[in-house]
Length: 498
Image 1 (cartoon, rainbow, N blue to C red):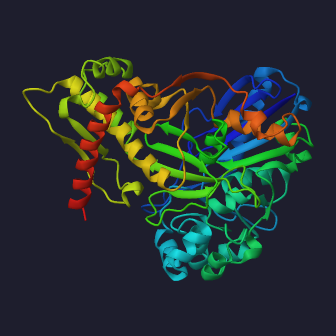
Image 2: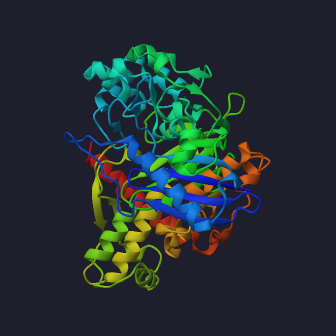
C-alpha cells in the first residue's frame, strides 16, 4: 500500500509517492520546473492564484502515477504540507474570491500591530503565544477593511493547505495547527481565539470547521479523482504548514527535539510541552502537528535571514572563480577554530526577527592584513553563521526547548563539517542527518489515517538516518572562546543600533 505527500510552496509543488510499510520513496517530482509566478500589485505585496497550486497538484500526481506505474487504488492516503500564513478566500460555491495573500506579503503588518496593542501584549501572548503581526488573521482583517465587497462574498477563509484539501475533498476544513499559525487559536481556552476575532470584528462563521492534523480529514471526491488520477474515496489524512511539516518529516515530534535547515535563510524549529512564548517576539510559537487539547506540543520557530546567503556571498565575492562549497570546506580546515581572531556577523539580509527586527548589517571584525588570508575569511563566515544559530538556540532553550537532538536534511549548510560540528559542540546536541523532505513526511503521516502505520512515531521513525554528528569535547574550549568574542561583538552592534 502507498501514500502520496504534497509540499505546496510558493515556488513549486513537490510530491512524493511512498511505500507505507517500509517508508521507501518510489518517486519524487515537482512542478513547474521553473518557479511559479508571484504577483506584486503594490510594493510589499505578494499574491498567487490558488488555482495554480491545485493545477500543479494534478500534474505532480499524474507524473507519480506514470513514473511508478502504481495503480491508483493502491494509494490509500494523501497528505499536504503547505506554505504558512497565506490567506485564501472562497465563496459559497468554493470559487476563489481574490488572489491569495501569501506568506511574504507585508500589507497587514500595521493591522496586526494595532490589534496586538488593543488586545494587550500580555493577554495576547499568554493566550495565542504570538502577536497577530503579519499572520493570517491580520490579512483577513485587512480584506475586511479595504475590500469589503470581497469580504462579504467570502464564505470560507482558509490557508493554502486548506484550499488544496477543499479541492481534493470538497469540504472546507482547517486544523488547530493551521488556526494557531494564523493567530486564531487560544491555547489557554482550548478554542478559537475569541479575543482576536472580537477585537478585529471578524465573522467567525467564515472560519472552517476543525479536523485533526493527523487523522481522517475527508476523502477524495469523484471530481478530484477524475482530475488527478487518484481513486475516489482515497483518504486525506494529514495537513500542516511547511515548518511544522518539515520538522515532523525529520521525526521531530517529542519535547527536546529540534529540526534545522540552513538554506538561503535558516530555520530552527524545536518542540516543547510548555505553553511557551517570547515576550520580545524574537521567535514564534505554534501548535505542532501532534498538538491536542489534552497534550501540549508547541513548536517554537526561529528564523535567521543571514545564513546560506552569507555562505554564498563569501564564495562569490571572496573565493576564486569555480570554487565549490567543498573547496571552501577544505580552505576552512586550513585555519584554527576562531579564525585567529577574525569573526563575522552574518546579518546582511534585512532586519532579523531574533534581534527584535533590528538591522545591524553584516560585519567583519578583527581583520589583520598581516595575518588573515582567504581561508580565514571563509572559516569566519561559516563560524559566524553557526554562531547565529547557537545564539538563537539559546533563546529557544530559555523557552523550554531542551536541545538533545537536532535533525537536519542532507542538504544546505549542514553538509559543512565546520558548520555542523560548531553547532553540535556548542549546544551539546547530536545532529542527525536524515534522508527525507517535506513531501515524503506528509506522505508518511497521511498513512496513519489509513491505518498503514500505527501512529506518527511509527510512521516517521522508520526513515533512513544517513549519519550523526556528536559534540567534540576537545574543541569545546576553543569554540566557546570564539563564540564569546562573537557574541560580544553582536551585543556591541545591537547597542549601537538602538
